[in-house]
Length: 268
Image (cartoon, rainbow, N blue to C red; front, side):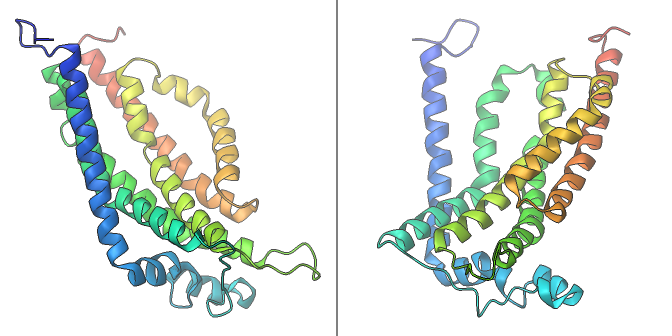
């Protein structure tokens, strides 16, 4: 299908562009994964198993609070019960690391596909969005890795229903907790961006967000209970920054509303 006379792309051309942007994004993730997998010792001994080591900042802090909160890295070993487990964990962890490293480029490709459909003024207002989205993502990753993941691991390693039960966890379960807690927090930190888009579309207002603040708190508590261990400390640790981001999002929505009124888009 040829482009129309006004220079707009046809449907098939949009599909072709989307295909190539997906290919480029996947290529960046694979490249990041190959780099991570090539640094296997650093990836696992330092990054993945870091939260259970005595030198890890969060672990050091927990130990300073109470010896019972310490995670003994030497005593924390994990089982590999099936032949392919270590290989599959190795590959999946590499892909997760590749996604984290390539995230700015992946979003850049996504935005490059979406932005031509916006008006020039809207594109101008969204200038720098790749930077802000990436910054929020990496802040969430750091928060998840240094706060949520080690606290979650500490809870699971030390929790026991009875002295007759011995904790002897598998490798894939440990890696899953660390990677998913970290990735989930990185995505949750995108809340202000999501609110910005919804406010631009007129689907939410600051007044609406204020009205349902208590409902949002309940939703955040439920969400934190899903992605963190069932203990109060972990839920509070994830709830506080999310509610802070919720308040920031109200300011974002208010700014969008004021600008819309100034431009005559939103009625007084």
